[in-house]
Length: 102
Image (cartoon, rainbow, N blue to C red; front, side, top):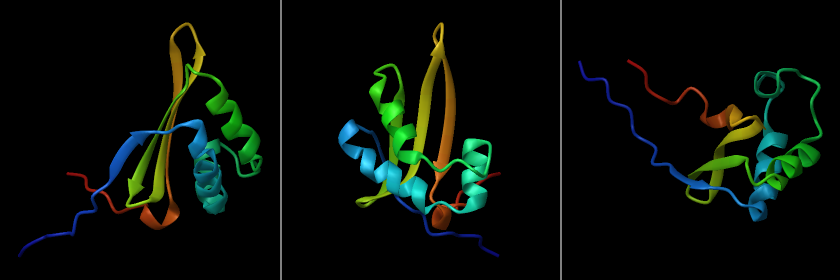
């Protein structure tokens, strides 16, 4: 028996302020469950204000995972204080559960 899955080739790059619309669109496309787990509550909806605040601080780090030109995931490391960061990762709903684990 062979267990073979086709691999998806993702490209990763640091996101810039010019990428904000893509991030906002990804967040707006998330299901209620994904929003709940990413933002620790299901009522968060002001993605534009949140994304602008993340990109406005140069200490924050934001990376995107791309499948071709489509943004399918975002990693954020948001500066808290004294060199500490809060990290979060979100994957677009249609691409969740397609990874591997052993």
